[in-house]
Length: 303
Length: 255
Image (cartoon, rainbow over all chains, first blue to last red; front, side, top):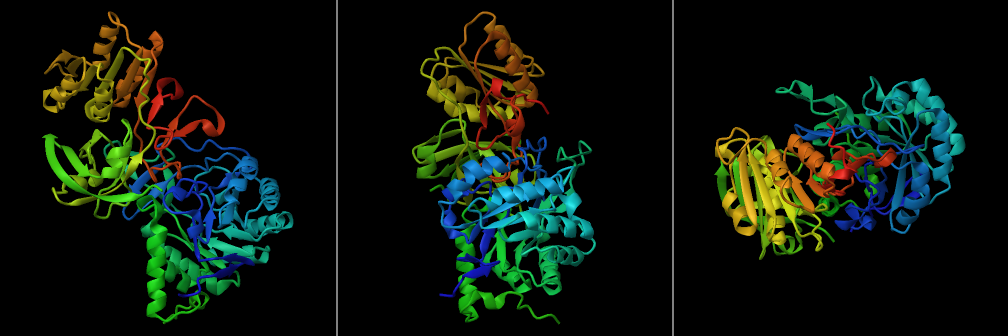
């Protein structure tokens, strides 16, 4: 058996498989299909400073090899999470990655402080949600803003700080460097790509929000390219995500430069996907005589 | 542990143009299924999302579901042949609540909304059933409902068969002369809004089964929202997990 352990920002993950925030709720629903302990870590639903109702439905549309979503960060708020949900998750043998979105720099800092006082393993700074009017993506597309936000939050966060990057930018490496310079401990990428689907009969978008974030296998090649670019541009460890359906996809993202890889949208198709992914990964490791999974991180050779 | 199951299709028929009646095998799902719950079904091909389809009936290791071909996913599903397997997660959701105290239940369904009401009607045994369809060619399951209810009234929007007009109006006329202490409903949104209004004006509790575009189907992704009368984070409920069946007074039925 290959050693699947990964040390990410000083936190030990028993395997490199985590879940993408927003696709996994707070884990309880999927725990019915495969125990949370199967995952190296789980990404909790994105939190905001105060509770949010989310966007009007429809919030989801199917597109070729993927989906568009416009949930709009429906969540019970960071304080509720810290008080009632995190203590439950702490009982499970897995790392919890807590995703936070603010409307202002102050909100991000307050949330980082609140989460720092919990048993969360990592704080993920969401500067890339495409479905909310304020905050979210507005913070993630300007390198100067990313740099100063990361610096400020860094002062208030005692947990390893991971900045989640948007693919909806001209140069993702500029944003990545800005986060690194601001004191981020790691980066996660990619969030969803902004998209739209129009019903040609009604001539209206399927999503009530008009636009939404594209995820699923359709975005995987974009994720692989961006992970590769960012891996070469910064020294920080990466959580890779974007259309991962199989163990082979996990390997591909790791070869591109990811240390951890998240399952997301694919869980909708197969809620106990983790078992197949692990089997598939082990078979790759056996075939290539890999004893330590860390050796494949960023190991892709460019032409 | 819940699980995804690959079930064999053992019977298939097209009961009206584009409406398919499937029976699949699964001892576990059949034993567990409650009326008003649904299956989350992988349609095959390149369709990424599962399709939520209500359980029509379940017993003796067999589950029956009926669906209309509406898009690519249901079209692919309709091509499955007897002997093929279908990848299913279920039963899912919060179904109809059957109260022992209820003496005079009404079941009202419109179009493909009649299918989720069949198992319920069987269990109630004494329901008065209203089934509405667009026209005579769309009328399905009349005899089956008739056999398991106290009375079944069928209507068509264009008057080509049975009661002439919207089925909610037929129910309203019936309520002017008869008592009722619970209404169960499923169908198109205009019908549900009419049923909700009639029920609430008369103070009759009313359970409504809703549909919405779904992601995970288990309550994790928050895609299938429906608007409730509450504020804050409870403004939108999850159709897949809090529903698909709600009491009419919980939901607004706004667009």
